[in-house]
Length: 410
Length: 229
Image (cartoon, rainbow over the protein chains, first blue to last red):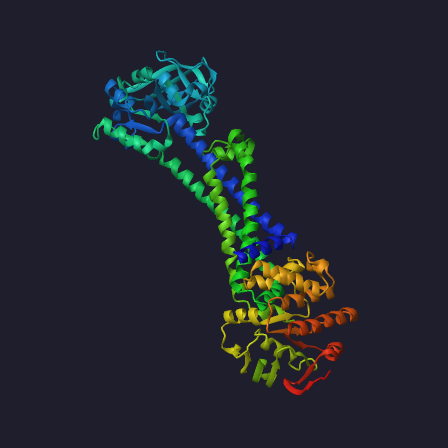
């Protein structure tokens, strides 16, 4: 106990002995922790937003589909959306909203140009409850259940050169090879977070879409949202059980959009490489400083061993010095990161110009945001703290083997 | 009563093809309370001999017994304990712990010995008063002169009541006044505490105060004189 007090006293006072060296160590740790937290928080923030854009604002966390639909996404593989299925969905308390949809591709033509688009037929009220679609109206008015109108993403509107009041013609395939042709006025232009939705999406009322595709009482999917994302897997099983194993299947968003999961995973991995490079740079700084510290104090260490201090205690003193410096750097680094991540979380920064375009090209919304996750902050703090302790092992071994005459000679 | 007994001590170093015999067959013993100086020209083997007596270096041949305990048979860890219990060191460059105050430096080895706090405090106060630094107890080495630092080093060496103190050129960095002052203190403590002092030195002022002068040349003892009075 006395020795521990002595070690801590010596270690603490040694920190103030060479302030430049101590500052370098603390600054290295502080920046490592700070940058690591910011990097990871922004990364996860962008993914979270991407998921939210795609899942909360479009696909829903779960979807009920005809089992054949996932292999061949055609109207022929629709399901019957009746009151029985609706009742089974609404009976699960964790489900907050749902929306039956008819989704199909068609050729959309305006006066001047044509483009392949994704038509989503949905109930205006249920869709708004599920995805908050009404808030996405940038121009014009939200469609109504019994109307024969459409709403489209702003990128698509720009491409087709249409605005509210203009007309768009669809040409596609309906149920059982029927021809789907229709002409709809533009009711509203929508703005989504995800660029792929902005450039491809068209909404028409569910009833209108059933008429267009000759698919009365049918839906290709029923999108479902939940109270909590954490319950997704449990609710998926519960809903599957409720609707029966054979009729229709319930898929979660990860199964529905493996490309999104893959793109996030891929980006996360490349982010990790950057993080490892950062760790390596900081590691070299910490390691170099520790070696310098031993070299500078070789005579002192030798003297301490000569007068009776055990090498083990000497190593421990160095380790405590290292822990104190790392802890100061890590704590301040994480504290400094909190206001930045909170600010980015609460006020996402929209990227303009080239940077924004680069984000859009890889399918991400050009917005920098961050998550405020205590687990992420503490994990980065621990990683850097443990890293510096690991880096102090070799200098500690050097001290464990130090002979008293090593530094006293000359 | 013999504190140290050295028998047929050798320390040889290899320098390329050449073998250097730094200490070459030394037989020597020290009694309790001696105030002895090991003298000789540079390269005569004084420091090497002192390092081996202090357990900082291992002999190539021969043995050193301290109070009947053979130092050559001790492991490195046991040697550290042995030094802590039996030997005090005074180095040429003072070598105090820069982050500790004079008081804490003196207390340091007693702390390592796990002596009770009251004993440590009393002994530290007693020694620092004896060496005339009772009013500088809270000063760190950086705030003390060379002479004062060396006095603290002597107090540190004496604090755990070792069997003997080894002082390697203790006055080499001191001016005349500080040297005289330090020697007075060491002689006084030698008398009062009855602890054996062994110096290696070139300094005539130290040699003049020694009660025993051992002269080394080429690693061998060429004379061993006791001074009366």
